[in-house]
Length: 344
Image (cartoon, rainbow, N blue to C red; front, top):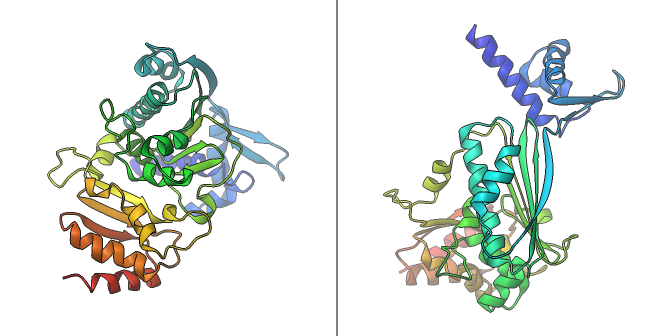
């Protein structure tokens, strides 16, 4: 009896997780995925409809399905002195959420508290709007303040030359403009806990978990202030401990010693990654970590000076820092090997 029940759960979860991408052909997609008949899939879909987790539109031939929004609420908070993020979570957000696993609920609590605290302590704004949405497949938060804008603040306080440089610094972690009160770890860890995490301000956005070319910072509708959107699957088995352990030191003392840096963010505009100054910009503050993974997703090639500055000069001057590469194509890999061959 356990195997049929487990299979039913798998089919149900598959429908919930994929119906948004396949509203008109989720029946065929599921049938192919599990090698079962369409009528068998429809029995599962009808149960989800009866439970109110799906909505159907159209006739039988043109039928489309969508997830039911179990929760869709928004509210505004004045960012006056004395506002506390844990009370916002406890009294306004947590009561909205339907039944969730302990691990997903813990991630939601951590993320909401961290981003709300950033708005309170750093935005220099007066108002924060929070939107909470939940379906059977995901929990989505959107937070928008009317402050200075996160990239503007980073650029100003770190005295950076370009607004886009603030996005690169944000991606590294351990970035704070108030070191006496904050470690700078919050946004980094939240971005790794959620399936999607996007920060938008001043016509730029940073999509933390997808740095392909089409998702690199660019103009959008955001003007002023800061908007943060984050989403996690309601069926996720990710835990806080897994995320913290991934970036902890080897003795698991929970010190933030590892980071991943999207190399594509070192590009300003349409420039190529060829110069030593670009490499130095990428390497700023990375001596605060013991292990650095440079993610070359979206980078087709790099110049010899850029590679030499990172993998020979910097590596030679910082032997205690381990540098690895992720998602590097053959051309980038060859340039990295050439630079490393010059290490003494």
